[in-house]
Length: 459
Ligand SMILES: [Zn+2]
Image (cartoon, rainbow, N blue to C red; front, side, top):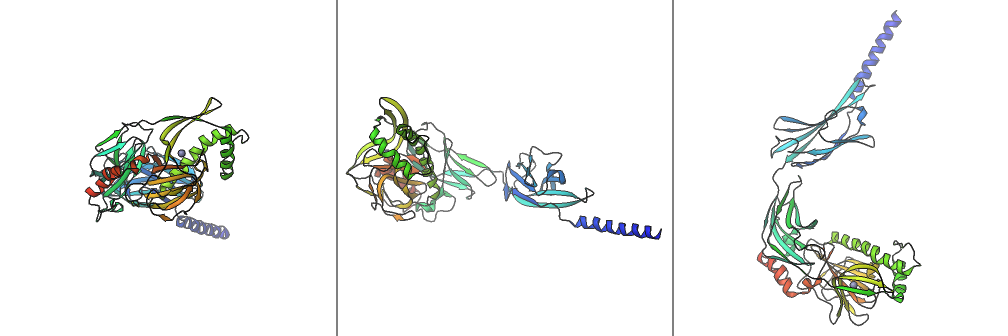
């Protein structure tokens, strides 16, 4: 009997210790990935708890503001959020903001996550409370366009100046579904420009309609977006069509050289020279366009160029911007492409000079462009030089206008010795005719900077 009582006492003590110890266990870890500092009308909610859903006794998410608590999510009432098992954790994704909590006002608030985990064979639970302070922002950023008269040639470029508040909003110009980023006006040589003044270069691409919607947008960190229309006119342009007769000798020269210099690119049937040519002309052309577009990420946030861009001298224009080309072989149509640059022919191995001041963003073999150089002129403006022989510059190097960067040749998809020249705006080919024109540079770009008080860039 005494032994029995002692055992009972020991068991009770042990059970008590385990019970007490289990209560001392850490609750589940909670990570609030979003919202971070701010939330708006419908900001992303992204919360992960490091326990699988079946071990969670409770998971509740609420928003607190001015001593009021507004429930947002619980395991039994998910409020439209989705719950997924991520590794060994439970992830809740949905939205949080004024849309789910209409009582929220533009003031500080707090996201509160309460999670409890069952321990001791489900007999006890341990709790965690994790909070994130957030600022509720409900008013979209304010935009005021300051530059006047925006005229754009189809396939061409333009610049706009505007003010945005708050100054940390992400803003730019949207043309159809393409967004062009903006940069602080100080990068355009406007002295003492406050951070709210922004500069954005944008384009209406050759294949966009002249009535494509164009507006300035600005998004804050809470996801509020403001838009502003501005006065603009797009002038239609007609682009030429041309027919190219493919010769076997040409294809037998260019196809093996391109494949040899582009080991990552495979053609299904390298022995069929026409099939290999068409695959290069279509698929490698597209792949090269993507590689070129990615160079826009490297652009400087300030204007590096000065005055009009220079067209290569003493050249015959063999092909213009956005010429629509139809390719024929032995009388049959085999492909169609758009030529997004100028072909300028002079004497073989003529020097190629930088069209303007800039930094070398690319200097290497690039598929259909052969030996190729791309110069970055800042704020998304770049120029490309293709089919070169020698590459006289290295990536990262600064070059001056008229500095020799290479010589012409027939590398890549070139039938004869010439320079392929393209102007790019945030990775999109635009007509260089604008950039070659001193009048266009003065009227469309420099005038707007001068009206904003800029002393630079000098013409
Ligand atoms: Zn070309």
